[in-house]
Length: 110
Image 1 (cartoon, rainbow, N blue to C red):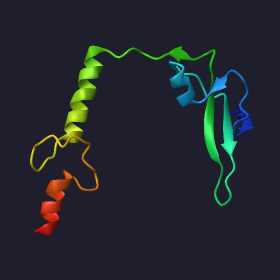
Image 2 (image 1 turned 180 degrees about the horizontal axis):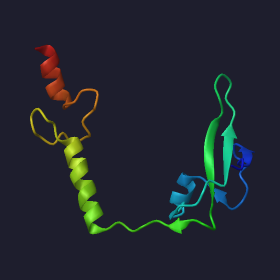
Image 3 (image 1 turned 45 degrees about the vertical axis):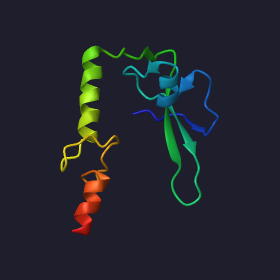
Image 4 (image 1 turned 120 degrees about the vertical axis):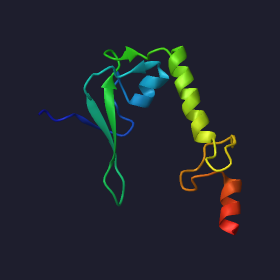
């Protein structure tokens, strides 16, 4: 098991990018191994770590299909629907409440 090269924060070599940077370029890692890592030092805890991938080995992002779009829309509708009153809240229901805010307020008052 080889060790990864470690670079300081903001000093990544040209030709390498994080997942977010790849996504902004319309790319994805595409199954390649992590090429290096960035470390940002912190005072009281361990360093923040970001993994780097080679841009030349990255593949284009897969296009959104109609079926995938429909599945995502269905999942988001389920996250917005209150299980108590069965209405679309217009926002994702907080997991901490388990229901929309008005239903939560009614239940906590009772």
